[in-house]
Image (tube, rainbow over all chains, first blue to last red; front, side, top):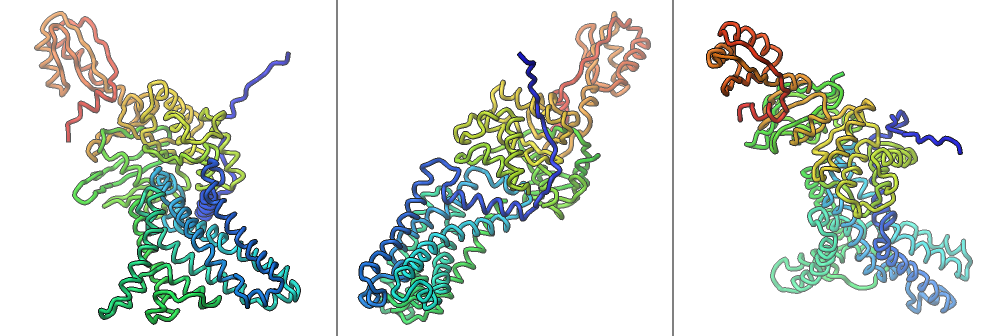
Length: 293
Length: 299
């Protein structure tokens, strides 16, 4: 039998590269993406996000199937078969659930579990932390919106009578209209969910508050806007969830008239409302975290 | 090397003054920052991290101003907070690796260091378990691991043995002592003075934001009391010793003199000769930090 020796590796110094604040921001960004998708977490944390992603992708596949069944894309469109704007419509519900999950997951646990004290003892500023979190949110939610649209676009091109490349060439506008519409949805919903998640510690309550604010705001705004007192129509602007839909309809074709449109507001007013909410939420969340740091 | 230099430092939270006009220098090694709850220890640590700005005065940590260059200072510091700081839904390996990346280490290197550091704190077998399943003692070890994983020049430990059972406390203090053998500079904040006595070689005592003492632990230990036994005239001898500025408690033919440094013994000999007391014996006892802390006037 040979003599066996146990080596104590002890504490080793590190002389390798240090990436500084940019490395810290990148780490927060990557962790944020993994957290929203439940990667590296217990199985139950993966179920919800991946189920929603699967539903969104299946919806895109079903849309392609409908067009394929009709046999001719131009004909199927004339017959009202669903396309890009309708896909947004279809998964607007599940995307809200996805956002209601992602926002609180990104902010609340760090705060409630005291992990902020670790973050801010590292070369990371409050702004760097928030920018990385926003980046993670935009990446995951953006992919949630865009990947099914990309699947639909490629699927339609594959079954198009005119052929794959001619279809893509004839629909180049989709390549900017879909991302701009996605940006409108992500900006409004992201600003709202971040503001709420920055003050509500329980992820479930933060998610419910986000959904409740959207639905209740829409319902109340609709009722008040129909009233006869002067300036009542401005209440329609409080139907916050209608604004990105107005932008979507403007870019991808009208579907229905939303409360602000009924009240006579142009699409640029919706853009202004979204930008205003973004600015207010950014100020609010930044101020809150500067106090927490 | 000086790890911390503080000059005329005052910090207040509105009307509450947390630190008052502090001047001190802390050398390399293991330093204990002691004081009761509310003494200003955590405020001091937060100032060192650049998370608070002093009301007046200045501070240099590892030669840098933490208010002017907070990111440089923080990249060289490891911090173990007193409270909870662990995400329960992550494994120990993932979290410690993440903590290393937050300090700027490349991901691959961070992963390697994470394994090594968890081995060092005795959690190699448990590193792929979720933190929510860890005991308090194991969580304290992970907190220590995340603080040292990036090889900091200075380690700040805020009540590292807090919430641990006696066995866990001994293990944590052993770990801190072990770090000292690897030339890691450590500042341990604690209100448990025996912990400081066991781990530190320099002590900074705070009370209600004021500096009571700052110096080597050996110097503190020298400030003991001396038990003196005489044949006769203990009261006359005590009067002579008191006249030289030392405290004396008389119990029969025994006198307890001090606390004080090596000045006590010659003073006692002189006083015994002058009083004709007949010195029988003289025994020096070392003072505990608690003795010294309790003897300081209350602020």
